[in-house]
Length: 114
Length: 114
Image 1: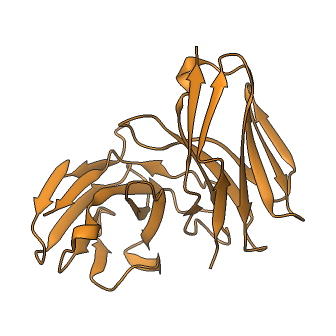
Image 2: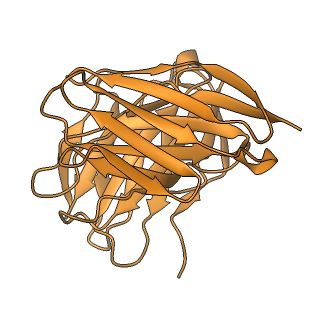
């Protein structure tokens, strides 16, 4: 089955700097890669996702890149703000005719230092 | 529009007992997913139901089971509870159709086994 590894497990950056979180996956058939943000005591929420037919996707300060050959994808947050502090999870799945199960990474606790 | 709801919020059981957790998906969503979030282990996929059928299950023993009702709500049952079953159990729902893959999470049920 799919295995997703996520690094680093914790990350502290100064407010205004950039943060990068990296994930690798094992199943070359995976074609859908979402990122979820979970603030303390709250439910995970989708912040951005990418399909295997594109290499990069941006949404304001957030971007995700995908390297299918190397089987890794990354989340980039620029101009970080205190509200970016949260646990971020990457995930991978194979989409055929609908949703399949998501395999999540173990999470990265991001702390933004004011 | 109401989000995904779960009940109860907290559940305390003793080892060997059974626990039943409930989830109501967003109106119009036919797919329901269950995840276990144990401390430091991220989100582990448990079960996926769509249109009343179990579509996929994660690497959990058979004492973890569930079902989906005609109104698309779902139950997760955990038999013969063990101490390591203590975790936050998250339910998520999606439309279940290709092209709309976002999973919306509920607030979770905190299960404590003593």
